[in-house]
Length: 490
Image 1 (tube, rainbow, N blue to C red):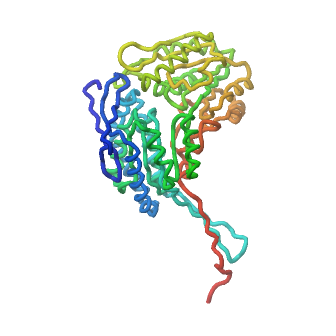
Image 2 (cartoon, rainbow, N blue to C red; image 1 turned 30 degrees about the vertical axis):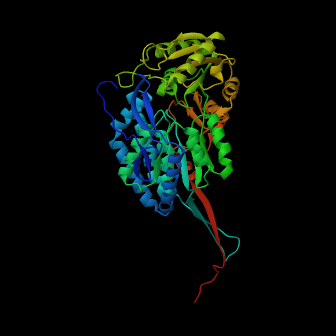
Image 3 (cartoon, helix red, strand yellow; image 1 turned 180 degrees about the horizontal axis):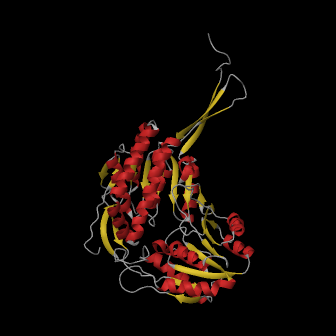
């Protein structure tokens, strides 16, 4: 770490309210991707630890499911306040283990905390209802009850927000949780768990198993019928595997999977607004986001002007270590991430794309790739079909609205899409025609805790955030109560 910065986080597993070493004594190295240096070693959990975490969560559920809505709300509110208090430390943790610029990490703390705050409030709104019965002596009452123990598996790209987006609604609903965070970014998860303990969480309500043995840990939870829900953010391939495995115990699933977000710019768009949005939608977290703009589709009549303006913007982005002032783009998470980005650039150039800015890895330590702008991108290039997960803008043109929509929808993914126009009628037509769960209409940053986030097609199942985010952790039961009677007794 630079500038003599310090961070605080546990490095052991959280199981049953205690911080413990992994049963087999293994440790997992955590690397700063901007320096390729080890910054910590955390406990490397194995299946035995996963089983212990599940036992603790199952015990905690028996009590927590009986807790009142206001008790759950108060716990989450205290957690929210502690996360806000710990803002600087959490942001620093994310920067050193993920690489994202410190300002972005600070913004993620705000985003992560917003889910805790939202579900602290939604905990009090898990309403049941009464339904008119077909016979006068009956009453029908609908109850909402917690689904059970939840297994959460989270990614490295948003190491705080992806946890709170899952754990907060689970707790609000009355569930307990076993959590397996990404092995690249375990420190943020462990600190969030520590703050929840400080808030007064019952032992075993949240259990954290950091591990490099992702499949073995997940299999323990998939094989145990006490786990009633799996919630996962990550690749579509892993999501499909979890879906197949969860069928054995009919476990519920929430899956937020891969994306291939199109970014449509029509000739009547405000180009400055569109470019401001593109800089966020593409380069936030170095492009390592499931909703990052991956295919930029610009109307033919303005594509040259758009490229000229975009080239200037991209060339002005500063790349470097996230703790350094003025840095806009940090490193890729690891060597494999960097190689995939370079492979997509090379493939596009080999098939006729034109390089307008960037295009190379940076020398020295760190997994850095220059912010890159490619023009003349065609459908025969990998970047038009695969998720790049890096700082590359790939621009192609279209002639008609119909062509733009058809190109945007020509993918198995359907997570997020962006649309820029000043024509109100077109805005509604295109927004409704795009086969995506999230639409940024003249907006490059559509994600928010009060809206239901999730995708169509192979981008996942279920929604996170909003009222729907709580629904995913609740079972619906109705009681048909007979022989209530019609008249008054007396």
